[in-house]
Amino acid sequence: MANILIVEARFYDHLNDMLLAGARAAIEAAEHSHETVTVPGALEVPGAIVLAEETARYDAYVALGVVIRGETYHFEIVSNESARGIMALTMDGIPIGNGILTTEDEAQAIRRADPAQLNKGGGAAEAAMAMLALKQRL
Image 1 (cartoon, rainbow, N blue to C red):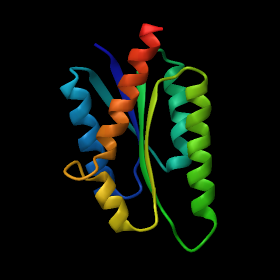
Image 2: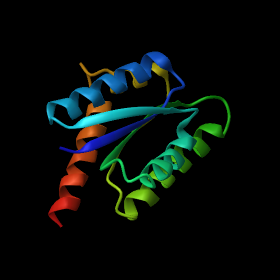
Image 3: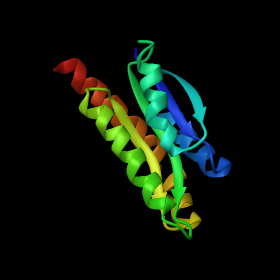
Image 4: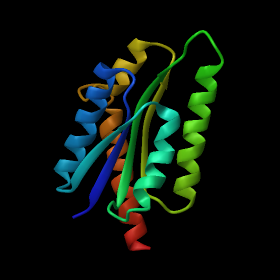
Protein backbone atom coordinates (compact mmCIF):
# COMPACT_ATOMS: atom_id res chain seq x y z
CA MET A 1 0.00 0.00 0.00
CA ALA A 2 1.34 3.40 -1.00
CA ASN A 3 1.00 6.67 0.87
CA ILE A 4 0.11 9.45 -1.53
CA LEU A 5 0.19 13.17 -0.82
CA ILE A 6 -2.33 15.38 -2.56
CA VAL A 7 -1.01 18.93 -2.85
CA GLU A 8 -3.81 21.32 -3.69
CA ALA A 9 -3.61 24.96 -4.66
CA ARG A 10 -6.92 26.05 -3.19
CA PHE A 11 -7.93 29.19 -5.01
CA TYR A 12 -11.39 28.21 -6.27
CA ASP A 13 -13.00 26.22 -3.45
CA HIS A 14 -15.89 24.75 -5.44
CA LEU A 15 -13.58 23.57 -8.24
CA ASN A 16 -10.98 22.20 -5.86
CA ASP A 17 -13.65 20.27 -3.98
CA MET A 18 -14.45 18.42 -7.20
CA LEU A 19 -10.80 17.77 -8.04
CA LEU A 20 -10.18 16.47 -4.53
CA ALA A 21 -13.22 14.20 -4.64
CA GLY A 22 -12.02 12.62 -7.86
CA ALA A 23 -8.45 12.19 -6.65
CA ARG A 24 -9.43 10.75 -3.29
CA ALA A 25 -11.89 8.31 -4.85
CA ALA A 26 -9.26 7.01 -7.28
CA ILE A 27 -6.66 6.57 -4.54
CA GLU A 28 -9.11 4.86 -2.21
CA ALA A 29 -10.33 2.58 -5.02
CA ALA A 30 -6.72 1.43 -5.42
CA GLU A 31 -6.59 0.85 -1.63
CA HIS A 32 -3.81 3.35 -1.02
CA SER A 33 -3.68 5.88 1.80
CA HIS A 34 -3.56 9.62 1.25
CA GLU A 35 -3.14 12.95 2.96
CA THR A 36 -3.86 16.42 1.66
CA VAL A 37 -1.98 19.68 2.13
CA THR A 38 -3.06 23.06 0.86
CA VAL A 39 -0.82 25.74 -0.61
CA PRO A 40 -1.74 29.31 -1.64
CA GLY A 41 -1.50 28.85 -5.40
CA ALA A 42 -0.28 26.70 -8.29
CA LEU A 43 3.21 28.19 -8.18
CA GLU A 44 3.68 26.79 -4.67
CA VAL A 45 2.75 23.21 -5.55
CA PRO A 46 6.20 22.08 -6.76
CA GLY A 47 7.87 23.58 -3.69
CA ALA A 48 5.47 21.77 -1.38
CA ILE A 49 6.23 18.50 -3.15
CA VAL A 50 9.96 19.07 -2.62
CA LEU A 51 9.39 19.73 1.09
CA ALA A 52 7.25 16.60 1.41
CA GLU A 53 9.71 14.47 -0.56
CA GLU A 54 12.44 15.40 1.93
CA THR A 55 10.41 13.71 4.69
CA ALA A 56 10.41 10.34 2.85
CA ARG A 57 6.83 9.78 4.09
CA TYR A 58 5.17 9.69 0.68
CA ASP A 59 5.46 7.39 -2.30
CA ALA A 60 3.75 9.60 -4.89
CA TYR A 61 2.08 12.98 -5.28
CA VAL A 62 -1.02 14.43 -6.88
CA ALA A 63 -0.86 18.11 -7.84
CA LEU A 64 -4.26 19.82 -7.98
CA GLY A 65 -5.40 23.34 -8.69
CA VAL A 66 -7.14 25.58 -11.17
CA VAL A 67 -5.73 28.50 -13.13
CA ILE A 68 -8.31 30.42 -15.15
CA ARG A 69 -7.20 32.94 -17.78
CA GLY A 70 -7.65 36.51 -16.67
CA GLU A 71 -6.90 39.86 -18.22
CA THR A 72 -3.14 39.83 -17.66
CA TYR A 73 -0.05 37.83 -18.56
CA HIS A 74 -0.10 36.31 -15.06
CA PHE A 75 -2.08 33.31 -16.39
CA GLU A 76 0.81 32.28 -18.65
CA ILE A 77 3.38 32.67 -15.90
CA VAL A 78 1.43 30.60 -13.40
CA SER A 79 0.43 27.94 -15.93
CA ASN A 80 3.86 27.54 -17.46
CA GLU A 81 5.95 27.78 -14.33
CA SER A 82 3.84 25.43 -12.22
CA ALA A 83 3.94 22.86 -15.04
CA ARG A 84 7.69 23.39 -15.48
CA GLY A 85 8.30 22.88 -11.76
CA ILE A 86 6.27 19.69 -11.67
CA MET A 87 7.96 18.38 -14.82
CA ALA A 88 11.40 19.05 -13.35
CA LEU A 89 10.48 16.96 -10.31
CA THR A 90 9.18 14.11 -12.46
CA MET A 91 12.48 14.17 -14.36
CA ASP A 92 14.14 13.59 -10.98
CA GLY A 93 12.10 10.39 -10.64
CA ILE A 94 9.36 11.63 -8.33
CA PRO A 95 5.98 10.07 -9.25
CA ILE A 96 3.55 12.96 -9.72
CA GLY A 97 0.17 13.22 -11.38
CA ASN A 98 -0.43 16.75 -12.61
CA GLY A 99 -4.05 17.79 -12.13
CA ILE A 100 -3.54 21.54 -12.27
CA LEU A 101 -6.18 22.72 -14.70
CA THR A 102 -5.42 25.66 -16.97
CA THR A 103 -8.61 26.87 -18.60
CA GLU A 104 -10.04 29.80 -20.47
CA ASP A 105 -13.08 30.12 -18.22
CA GLU A 106 -14.94 28.63 -15.28
CA ALA A 107 -17.22 26.50 -17.47
CA GLN A 108 -14.20 24.65 -18.88
CA ALA A 109 -12.83 24.21 -15.35
CA ILE A 110 -16.10 22.76 -14.07
CA ARG A 111 -16.28 20.27 -16.93
CA ARG A 112 -12.73 19.10 -16.24
CA ALA A 113 -12.93 19.08 -12.43
CA ASP A 114 -16.29 17.37 -12.01
CA PRO A 115 -15.87 13.64 -11.22
CA ALA A 116 -19.06 12.96 -13.19
CA GLN A 117 -17.60 14.62 -16.29
CA LEU A 118 -13.88 14.60 -17.23
CA ASN A 119 -12.65 13.85 -13.67
CA LYS A 120 -9.19 15.34 -14.04
CA GLY A 121 -8.55 14.96 -10.29
CA GLY A 122 -9.11 11.24 -10.58
CA GLY A 123 -7.00 11.13 -13.71
CA ALA A 124 -4.12 12.89 -11.96
CA ALA A 125 -4.28 10.38 -9.09
CA GLU A 126 -4.29 7.50 -11.56
CA ALA A 127 -1.26 9.00 -13.34
CA ALA A 128 0.62 9.31 -10.03
CA MET A 129 -0.15 5.70 -9.17
CA ALA A 130 0.87 4.52 -12.65
CA MET A 131 4.20 6.34 -12.37
CA LEU A 132 4.76 4.87 -8.91
CA ALA A 133 4.07 1.38 -10.25
CA LEU A 134 6.52 2.00 -13.10
CA LYS A 135 9.17 3.25 -10.69
CA GLN A 136 8.74 0.17 -8.51
CA ARG A 137 8.88 -2.15 -11.54
CA LEU A 138 12.02 -0.57 -12.97
